[in-house]
Each structure stands twice: as C-alpha cells, then as structure tokens.
Amino acid sequence: MRRLLALGVAVLLPLTIAPTAQAQAQDAADRQRAFAAAAAEYQVPESVLLGVSYLESRWDAHAGRPSSDAGFGPMHLTDAAAYTGSNHHDAGEEDARGDDARPLPAPAERPAPAEIPARLRTMERAAALTGESHERLRSDDAANIRGGAALLADYQKSLGAPLSDDPGEWYGAVAKYSGAEEAGAAKFFADEVYSVIAEGAQRTTDDGEQVRLPAVTGLRKIEKWLEKLGLRPPVRPDGVECPASISCEWIPAAYQELPPDDYGHYDLANRPVSQKVDYIIIHDMEGYFLPSIRLNQDPNYGASWHYSVRSADGHIAQHIKTKDVGWQAGNWYVNAKSIGIEHEGFLAEGSTWYTEAMYRSSARLVRYLALRHGVPLDRAHILGHDNVPGTLPTTVRGMHEDPGPFWDWAHYFQLMGAPLHQFGGPRSGSVMIKPDFATNKPYFYGCDRKNPEAACPPLPAHTVWLRTEPRADAPLVKDIGKHPTGESLYSVYDHSARASTGQRFAVAERQGDWTAIWYLGQKAWFHNPASAPTAVPSAGLVVTPKPGLATVPVYGRAYPEQEAYPADIPYQAVTPLQYTFSAGEKYTLAGPAATEYYRAVTFNLEDHKVVRGKTKYLQIQFGHRVMFVKADDVRVSFSG
Image: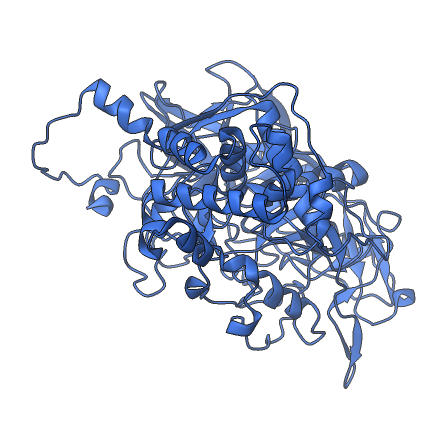
C-alpha cells in the first residue's frame, strides 16, 4: 500500500472517522504520563527517568524493533536473545583503499553467547523487578518505561544510595544504566544525561508522541556514587586523539609486512605536514563494535579506519593516528585527505541503533578533529561514505551507501555546534535540503533481510526523492553511473535519486509546491511546499561552464597533471566520470580542492611522497556525491 502511494497511484481507503482534537492531544501525551507514573511507582525523579530515556532513544519507541545492542523501547531494555544479525564490515565489494582492489576475507561471525556482555541482559532483570513479560517489555511503551524505572531504582539501592527526590543523588545509577564497563564511558553517559536534565528538552517522537523534560535549575552531580561502581579506570595511553570529555581508548589497527611483497592495512604519513586533512568521513559498520574492531586488527583485511564508536554508550576506540592514512573511503584521493569514523550498527535499521549517546560522542569527536585540522563544519567536508565519489567510471557503481537515509544529519550538526541554517530569501538561487527529520518518512523497501522486497516501516529520514517531473507519480531521476542500463530504485540502499539534509544545490526551476535542482546533469524535482518545506534558502557560489563550452568534464579525484610527476612515480590519469555537465546547468561550489597525489605503495614511510600539481580544481555538489571540476573550465558566480 505504501509503495503504491509513494508512486502516486490512487488507492481507495475505507472511510474512517477522524479522532477529535481532544483525543489526539490525549494520545500524544500518553508517553509523558507513562514516564510520570513509572517515576512515581519506583520513586525515581521524573527528570532522571526522562533524561536517561532521552540518551537511550530520544524517547522513541522504534516500532518495537531492536537496536544493534538488542535494546527495545524508550528505555532501551536489552534482551540477549535478540542479539543477532550480520557482522560483515561495510568494506564490501571494493578494496576501501581505493587503488588496486583485492579480495577481502570472510566477514566476522556474530559474537558467541559467551561473549554477549552483561549490558545486553537488562530485560531479564526488568522482568523480574516488574513482573512484566519480555514480550510486553519489548512492545508496550508503558511497560518498557516501568522496566527502566525499576532498573534505575534497583541500581540506586545496590549502590547504597537513597531513593531521593534530588536528581544529583542518582548519578551513579544513571552511570550504571549505560552498561559501560569503562569508567570514562559511564561518566560520559551520565554527564550527557545531566546536561539534558539541566538544559531541558522537548520533541515529537518517531510515533507522534509529544514529550517534554523541563529544565532543572541548580542541578548538581554527586559523582562519588560513580566510584562505587568499580569500573575499569579511564586510561589514555599512546597519545589517543579525543576530547577529554568523551570516553576514548587506544586499540591499534594492525600494520604489518605480508608475503610476498605486501603489507596491511593502512599507510604511514605525516599529516598535516605532508597533506592537510580536508574531510571527515562518517561510516556505519554494518556490524557490531567488537567484531568490527577485530577486523581492524587483522592486517590481511583490506580496509581500516581511524575511530570506532559504540552504539550503547558512545564509547570510542581509536585505531590509527590521524597523521596516518586509513583505507576507508574507497577513493585514494579522499583517503589521503580524510579521517574515517565507523559507527556500530546497520544502515537499514536506522535510528534503532543510532543512539543519542552515539550522536553526542561522535559529534564531539568530529568537532574536536575539525577544529584541530581546519576542516569546515559543513556537508561538503563532513561527508557520509555515500557522498564520496568513485575515482573512475568503472568504480562508481560499487561505491558505498552508508550511513544511509536514517542518519539524522541536522541533529548531528546541531550537536557539533554548527546548526544547518538557511541563508538568503525565498527566491534564492540555491537551496539546502532540510526536511523535518521527525515527520519526513519517505517510502523505502529493503530493510528486512529475510524479505528484501518488503516495504520498510515508516521511519524518520534525512532525504527527499528526486523526480523527472513536478508530480508525485513521476519516475525517479536516473544515475547512469550507479545504474548504467536501469532505473533508480526505492531501495534503502540506493541513493541514485535522493538528496540529503545539509547538501546544497542550485535551483533549476520552481513550479507550485515543487522545486527543481541541477543533479547529475539533469533537472531533478522534489516536493517542497511552503506549508511544510523540505529545503531552505542557501545563497552562495555556484559554477557553470565557461561561455563557449557545451560541456565540461567532472572528476572523482583532483590529481596533478602529468608534467608534475617525477620520473620514479607513475602518472595517475585523471579520467572524467561518465556524467555530463552541460552549458546552462549550475552546481554549488564547496571551495578549491588541493591538486595532490599521495604515493604510498610500500611498508616504509621513507618511500612515501606527495606529488603536487599546478592544475586548479574546484569541489562541487554534483549529485548525492561530491565531485570535482577544473577551475579553467567553469565560471564562478553568486546565486543570490
């Protein structure tokens, strides 16, 4: 049914009587009342219960679906019996290094039952404390909230702490609720909960519930209770590169010579002395934290990354120093100039595993790295893996799709202290994609591994569909690189006809509630009504072919001209991609791109060299992925 509606097919539905405004308001307040009732029953301050739930789920129910840590409902009660799923890392078909592809080893198996940590067994304890069945704790929001309140009260008693009305006395119980085994991770979780309590919060949840946590003034944190948990003390050896306010440890990736004349599985460098870091790449693991880390410790595995972020509590492991180059983006030009951050979870399962703790910890890390390396906090430099271009026409099709449409980019940038604001008037010549994440639930299929053709449940998403004409039943625009002979798909794994929050595009035309942007050499229409806009004005610089040029080539890397290469380094051809950038089209400009090639094909740093050229390149938003053009081919102007 949803697929027919998404395609604009008329469907006759049975007549239903709309609920009254009073009934709607009552339904929207059900979760708020559930928090109040559970807090009173178990003598937990309501602010503490709301704050913990906000960090675990932002009060969302996730339609009864488990997170990557087998957590259910607003309180993220974890059930070890549900801890299943694929553990393959998203290095996928291509060598993530971006040069000569090599076959990757078999994916890691899911953790054995003996490896399942205690933090994944909270539902058992909640059931014992409340008398609720596992089924109700999974699927009934009020029961789930009761279970969370009972756990907090149980943790408080186990610490010998009072069931006090003072939220500050609950600091240790809140830290224990994180399930973290490291004191730093538990402290980060508790500090973030108390930050939410102090600032207050309110939002509409994924199923339309309105929940509010009023700010608590004069809030204190009694941190002595954290010490009683007996957790592993925070240790930061080897110069781990993380802000002091988050939990971070050093788990090094393997760097080793391999027979007969090979090595794995990253490259030594001296950034930013050798090259400036220009990008931070956001990935998901398509798997779990510990098995994915094991892959990073295997020198035979053909991919590596700098940081891993755990879903449950935001704990971070650093594997590669930021001065060195990870094999993580599938584009060697981008690899050499980027830092890669992997997040535990699965693309198709959306916000059930993109937790608030993960967002907050990751956002703090990105802001720290961006300030340290001078990376602009915008969507042209903080990229998803799905925004990285292929290097050659032959590699475009195999590029990756993570972190997918359910990553909340607007919230992420808000947490970084760089909110995505509009700039310009309503008739601005360019726009920034920015649908309301909570209410924007476009049709997708492919979320169910057992039934890949089935429609996904309605989930908040950051993306808009792009069509050939300004009507809901028009075909999706085509991506000739992704689908050389076929149509774009509504698959959750296919971004061929999607634009993403924070991306800026030049406006091609407007008709009523529809806006057309220039996208992969064509006009692409998306629904953008004034009453519920899915984009905001974003005036800025755009590029178009210079007068007299019918088309200009676009590239997936900004490599030097042949004359720049010394005799001992093979020339790396700069091959145009298969797309057409024609006269009359405009694309937003992100800025200049350094003309560099990092030659690193041996185990020893002494053999590595940077080749720099004189050709000037510009980075543009050409489709869902960024691409590059030569500055001499285009004219730059301001889209007011």
